[in-house]
Amino acid sequence: MNNRKLITLCIALLIISGAFAQDSTLIIIKEKPWYKPDYAKVQFAGNVGFLSVGFGYQFFNNHLCSDILYGYVPASVSKAKEIHTITLKNTVPVFTKEIKAITLSPITGFTVSYETGNNSFLKLPNKYPKDYYSTNAFHFTFFIGAKVHKDINNSKRINGIDFYFELGTVDTYFWYAIKSKEVKINQIFSSAIGINLYF
Image 1 (spheres, rainbow, N blue to C red):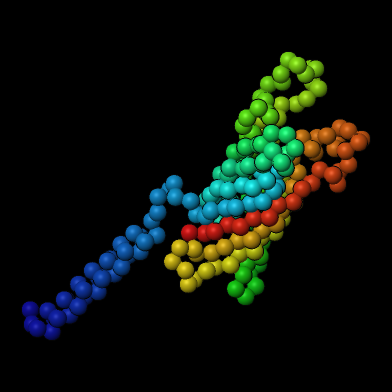
Image 2: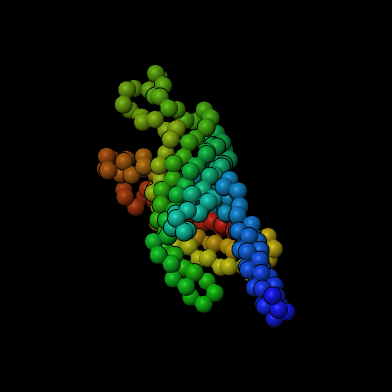
């Protein structure tokens, strides 16, 4: 084998090994534990707590966002006892529209909340007349809203941020609006605002 062929073979081997090395490096960078959340969330109001905090995951190429939240309502706000809730929240961006450096999305979704403590019950206590109250430990909420997303490129810890607004109702409120003439449909809705911080 002459020198020209030997040099050509060495260069080819270097290029191939370099390509494999780059591929393996990319895989290591993109890989992340399944349990590591994609973002942290802080929300004010929205039928899941006066203030809620938690974390979330993105699925199906960011077409579904699922959050786990802890919500708290102080006694001064609830006008009774303080309230603690654990919530699974699911949000679906209807579509996305990029405008310069931000992304706008109409959103919709639902939550499932479990209220802990003495304010709630899974089975109606005997002190209440039968079928007078419904169980109130679990609640479902339905909401619509809008989200604004901004990527952050110059930060080592935060990759992006969302600001969102929601308008929603609780299942029991909706049921009472249908069942009772005293409760009007415009009285059952409440709003929420929140922030998502992406890692």
